[in-house]
Image (cartoon, rainbow, N blue to C red):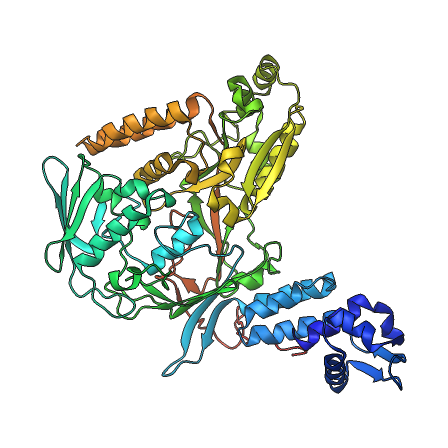
Length: 619
């Protein structure tokens, strides 16, 4: 425990000591949870800092006098700021998170912290390094490609690892990547991938076909512990045919397996690093390599030996901040960097801030799903249909300020968003009729969610409450939600889905992944889905396959097992000096192509701006 923490304990436990207070060493020993000898040592150090006046009593058991001279909340803020300047973000956040810290001092710290984010130049061995520092409000759960569930984790996996092929999001075409060529047998069961030469992993060794074969079989061995097990369910054998040729044998025809190979879940990892049972530090072939990761920070550095174009930034730092402690004001986050935000939060009155890059609609949606195998009102189809009709998605968009989002009718947004503001799924009169016909008697419905969807769930509680539908929330951490232990006793779940690079793969993943997607696919529905998916895999025509996948969405909507809510809109607020800003299909900003263009302006230019270092206390 730091000295300032002991002092803060005195402030919270003995607030009257600010004016002077008789105390005993025994009393202070109980507050500090240490021996009286250590208490004396701590008090002397505080006196040396001029934080206290300490007048020890004469004789054992006699009262001493303690006076607190400084405001502990101010000292906590100052020490947290010093730690941030030394890039010790975790202990800094622990200090400002202490119980009893004054809200005003905590707010002042987070306002100041805004200046630490964005574009930075730091000294390097041979030249200044260009660093982009961003706040993150959710802890990273995993950077193992076989274990990831959330889109933010997948986004970072894409920065660290590569796949055999990639899909062009604009055209839907499968493109060469680690494999420069591939071919399939006429029956769709034998696939051969030809790997590029000279591709290196982050730890220095060259990529080989043996690594690719190992990566496929590693995923297969993970079984149902991973949401990506379906990718290799039909893989009978994966083996290297020389250093650069990978052969994959399937148990059944699959004319889409090259598209399967584009999934981030099938990222290629080095066998010598991931072959042991220990959890290794992430090592891939991607444009960035991981140099540091803990609960408070994730640091990526450009990989100089990347087989494609080197990243333009030298380093990206993600500082994990506590949820609910957003850095303010928003301009300070975005002034020299970028900050993906949902909705319209751009500061239009700031002339030096870009008006925001409209990233379009997320390739995915927010949804409610019902578990009809659990007791409760959700078992009644008429009740589910009533909820579908009573929810007014435009009201949700308006009331929680999700500007530019649109109501969702299907899993993927339409190519051309509708011009009117109507919610085609909302019909209050019909919804009330069905609710009455369902025989609903006010039984509570428990809605489960992770911390990322609290705002949406609270709106659902308020909105359905006006029709007499009681909804209770059960909020889980992201870690708890990822563990899936909640599935067996959940009545209803609210969540979100985001596509990776390919909309076809997106539909395949959510239908195959089931509970990992947040969907409750009961036995009959699951069997029907699997039967149709099996037919789609065996179909040679890509056009027919796409059509078949779109038809599968109707199965989910048929019995209202899933109710779709909105397609969220992405907007990125950033400095006009940050270039190469694009929003990917996950709603995230790709790091590889970001670069900073310094301003060129005259001395008397009205747009003149100064770049200041992080200010010290009083500076």
